Length: 202
Image (cartoon, rainbow, N blue to C red; front, side, top):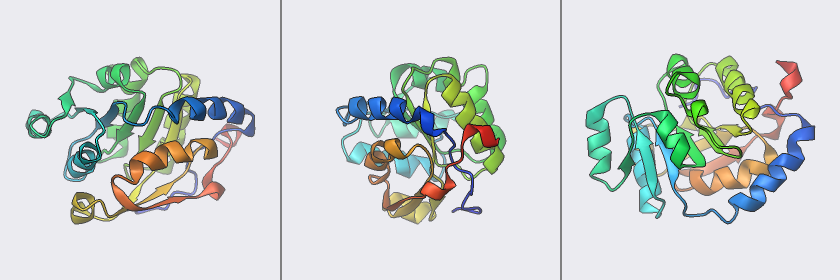
């Protein structure tokens, strides 16, 4: 559910496009390599489970051990913190309840950006303050990663049935790589080019 179809979704200068194109060529061969998933709540668990159903190995973490245990029983690999997930996967999806959670997961002491690899694709499906999405995009870019903003429309039932709608903003050349994963979890994946803003506009 998207409270705001965020009008400032990801945010890279056109001069970065050649970098994105290089990443796409590598990622197009990645296909069924492991996908990181952070946030195994009411929405995150069925979303991540649908990735497993499509044959993607999932490496996941959550602050609640019981959520991790349940998902581990579904066949996922569970790690202790977001940094460890970033160390093992170069495509990571986050589905978190609030802006402070996103900031902690990305930039905290054990956050994604502590061990992120250059070229990693980050997809955030949390419904958060647009300013936080911008901040995470800038932080990811500084580490050589690509941040895509992909909030969802639809509830737990839609998540379980892979019927979510994703509204995606970010580097256009990376949309196909994001779409490959998002179509496992949703019926509609919409790219909104008008919601990409250059870093200089922050």
